[in-house]
Image 1 (cartoon, rainbow, N blue to C red):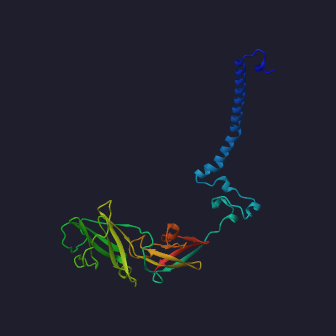
Image 2: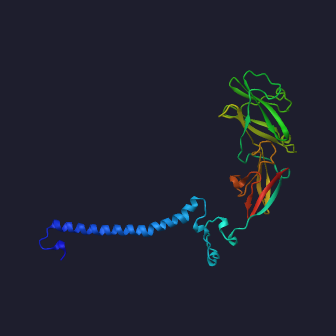
Length: 303
């Protein structure tokens, strides 16, 4: 007969006996769970950490990536191989290196001044309180700041930035003769801030090539510093390049080296045909490689 049903046992004694029985069951369950965690879960978690997590944190290939599948599994067309470092794979499973090919791009053949299509890169244009040379200057009552725009082939354009009655004016020596009084009216502010304006020069003069149109520079005050201007080119050359028998829209912008040269700035290629040039895959710096359909293209941009 169960103890809690003994003749004469009180209800309180019966409840106490049931509690002790349940406590014994709970303790046995917890002990079994602790043993399961110690003997099964913890070793498995430790093995997973050492094989998969720790190598990834150290920048190495995990065990799953280093695993070499058996021939039958490797031949399965539906198999998705794990990510692995190439040096950890057998030579037969490695992707062959791309074929190297250099592409000549001649800007005088098919490229012409176009719209502003590639994001510009701004460059600093230092200012000084005194002219660096024996310049002839216009009369000015405000505080002057002097600088020189240096473009390709050693072409230097001295300029004077002066503020009078709270208004900025930029005098540019367009004919580069050291006289800033014979170049027409100064450039006025075209922006919404302190000062910004378009500095326009003949494209033929800047590049030394028979190109029609203007070479436009956007010049503006650096809001963080008063000892320099910021400047970038807004004139870009548009054309096409042929890769693998297909033509792609291309743009060359005077971005990397602001000198009006265009041959030392890389090239941008619209690979997906969306009319935009975006990301490092489509906007290439000089000697960057574009990998496309197993071929690594590098571009020799010249005139």
